[in-house]
Image 1 (cartoon, rainbow, N blue to C red):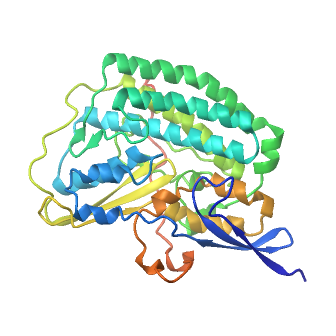
Image 2 (tube, rainbow, N blue to C red; image 1 turned 90 degrees about the vertical axis):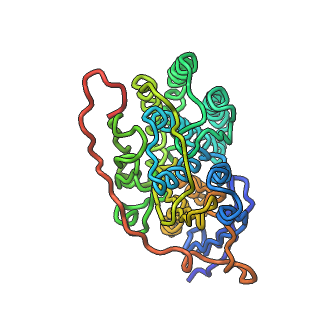
Image 3 (cartoon, helix red, strand yellow; image 1 turned 60 degrees about the horizontal axis):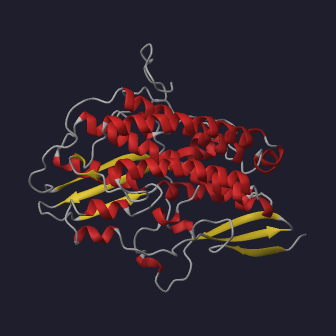
Length: 402
């Protein structure tokens, strides 16, 4: 009988973009069990809601993560707007949707580059990140920032798009699409990539449900879970959105979902530009958030994030709480690592696209003096939430992927 060997993996590792530690229990080269330890990043962001007023905290919420900063700002202001009963103008809703989908393209391209780099495919890594620069340039042109945008506010958005800006976005995205498709073909058909990803790290549909997986990780296993199908989510209902799904549930399926979502996001952005309504981009905000609670959700690039706020009638909220998608995907990661080869561990971890800075955005008081904390005491099995995967048929000539 082979002896079990424990191999530490992370938090500092050449293929890991963020600090996560795993104790891998091995028999020969097979993983028998993976024991994660989290808690390397302590920033206390949620506590700051008591020291910054409800408008100022928008800038703090954006800094939960640099990759999906716009979505965190949007999720926070959506929750405050719901608590205060504020309805934002339609143009602001379209602009938020446009910038959010640009963030998705940015995030997925960044991830595709990291995945290529982990497999030693340096030219593919550079191609993905060069295309990502096009998106960052568009952010800089339209919001003034490349990572933190500070464009979302309670009541709408701080900036509007001119006709010239809208034309520039359309032209650059159409030009980028051709290069992206050439890169996508390599991910889908190159023999080396196929051998490293196909049939590796399989997560079944039932396991995706049982472990409460979210985002591309869930959709790659055939679970059509996407909050953009909800009625209250930006302009997606007007754009006849449908989630992208695959059935295989392996690493390659998770790559395919993100590749298709980049194409879909480009279509959604072009649809926003073509159907952009006229009118104001913000409404006046009077008074303070009333006593009460409100929560909402946003479909981040990695999956559904939950935003909760509690008001007390003053300018400072009493509570802000955030549940990030990586928080829900880590238990599924532990499941799919069981039985895999040690050499496949880096690729499997990368295909769930973990964002540890999002996950560890607050001080975990229980970790002080207790050493490592495993997932057993941190995660509960969440209720699976399915949103309608079938949208109404698009009108003839309407731009947007259906």
